[in-house]
Amino acid sequence: MVAGGGRDLTWPVERVAAHLLEVSCGRLVQALFHGAARGADQAIAAAAEQLGWPQWPCPAQWDRHGRSAGPIRNRLMLVTALERVAALPQGCGLLVIGFPGERGTRSLLEQARCMAQRASSFRVAVLQIPGA
Image (tube, rainbow, N blue to C red; front, side, top):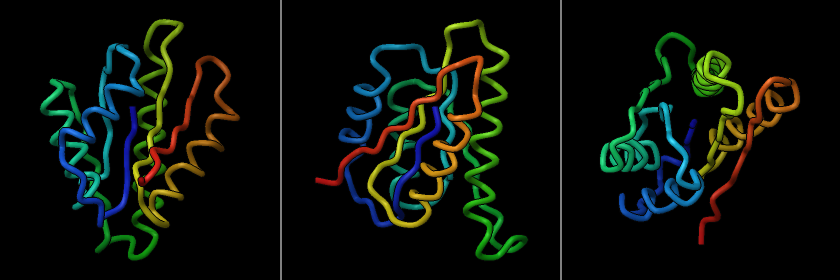
């Protein structure tokens, strides 16, 4: 699973955990990748901890890549998650979740949708959690 959202998201961890549980539909989560930024990513990390899910924080390298760091990080998270799914038994898939956010979240979801069109041996689902 890959999850991201806006830096200004202030939802309680319990709300984020409830959404993660709902969208996982009771399936085993092998790893949860997140961007390790403030806001949604912090809540996602805390929710994963609460749920006992292994997590892979992937912080953006702003000093190295400048303004491109976010999209580069998003691509790296997705590619790494896809590689892990490809190594799992047939029938496994990747779920990409966008919590409320702005450009960075849109970038993550757009990249995921493009990759989903190219993935042939497993399913990639992309979901947006509404902000209300």
